Image (cartoon, rainbow, N blue to C red; front, side, top):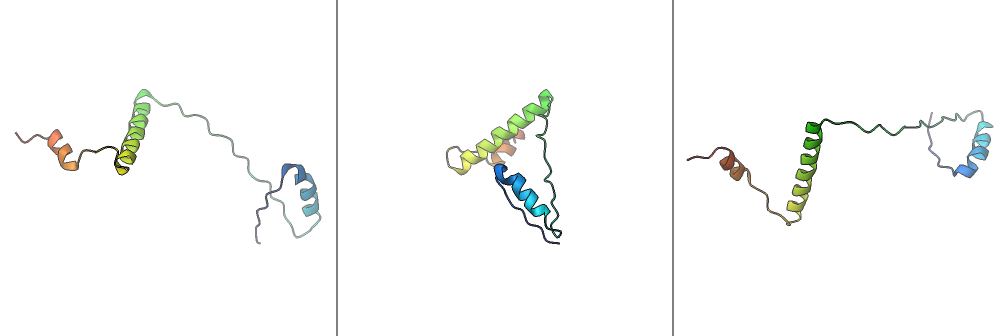
Length: 84
C-alpha cells in the first residue's frame, strides 16, 4: 500500500473527505493530534545547569564569530592545577 499526504484547507476538508470515502481503494487515516508537552518543573540545580549550558553555547557561538576569545585547554589545566 502506498501513502500520500495531502494538505487540504479547512473549509474544503469535509467535501474532500466525503469524496475520498466514495472510493473503495482509499483508506482515510485520521492524523494523530499531538498535545503540547507540559512544561517541565526543574529543581534549582537543574535550572542552573540549563542556564549555564545555554550561556556556554552562546559563548561558543560568539567565539566562532570572533567576538570573544575563549580560554584554551592548556590555560584551563594551568588554572585548575597550578605547577608552582
